[in-house]
Image 1 (cartoon, rainbow, N blue to C red):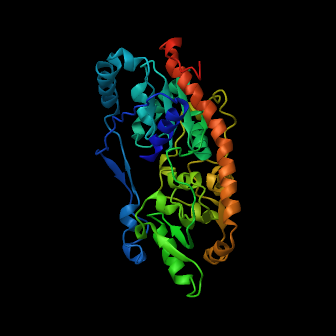
Image 2 (cartoon, rainbow, N blue to C red; image 1 turned 180 degrees about the vertical axis):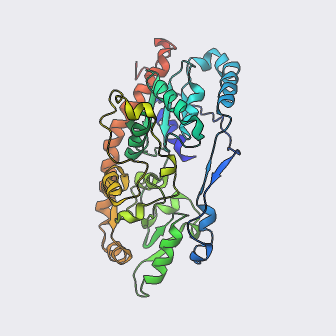
Image 3 (cartoon, helix red, strand yellow; image 1 turned 90 degrees about the vertical axis):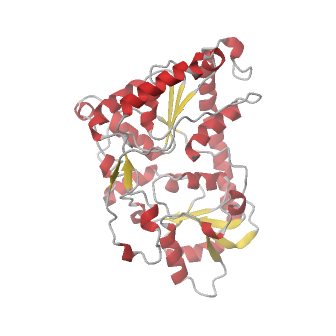
Length: 384
């Protein structure tokens, strides 16, 4: 739910004085899913009794893609796009799965793609080749504004399609809370999945005289207005990009994440070898314009030290200024009490301002394209 908030909040920002209405037609998918057995027996997680239930070891598969796409287009043309005032001021938005962009193909409207998961997520294998071709065609339209929400995903899209999209990491404009540390002896460890492992280790190795206390998300009211009052937050990522990471960063809350690359092996995340496939026409042909040279290591199969070392250069955990990398549990316990919280938070705020300027130019262009079909009279005066 957090992913669509990003483009919607940006449209609201670049259209001051206008009302931006967001209509989501997507319902939770209840179709077939491909299941994968958990690699460890349940007794291996005595301190994390819900771990195996909460980690998504199934991949939903869209089996009626063509029929659903046709029905959705007919619905839009018959209802919303039949109204002149809606047709002249609509922006179409697709997020996850990326395949939903295909539902908007041919509607001759500005199409915004804000992506957070790989290209083939939810697409059955027999449809991968045709979908890759369709994606290339849709992305090449001057009406398409496609963005990856992290650098690694942009590399994955180029790997599987030859299409190079822009990277705009989430700025979470919808977050209204800012870092205000009133609980200076409390540290939040909020991730609901692998955090149970981290919390278990912290309980085991934290000495009784340690000056700080650790809290899980379940120990709070689960609201960001509470989270920002903690001294800092410790994340134990379960995927290569987390909206929670970007939301904490937007609030300038000091973030601590593991430094060792072994903690970024995610065999059951959405970025896995199971989805690593490249069409023959891309492997044997010439790369598309602006795609760049093909790397030797796949950004979807990060199962080796060399691969992790290379692609960690595209993970925002290691790229964003101010993010603190802890080498071990002992190292974390040593770092937390002595961290320069004010300096870290200031560094995060400064970097966010730089990214705000860059992102504003992109979303201004989206709005200009959306209003062009309505004529100059409909163009906001700030953008005309």
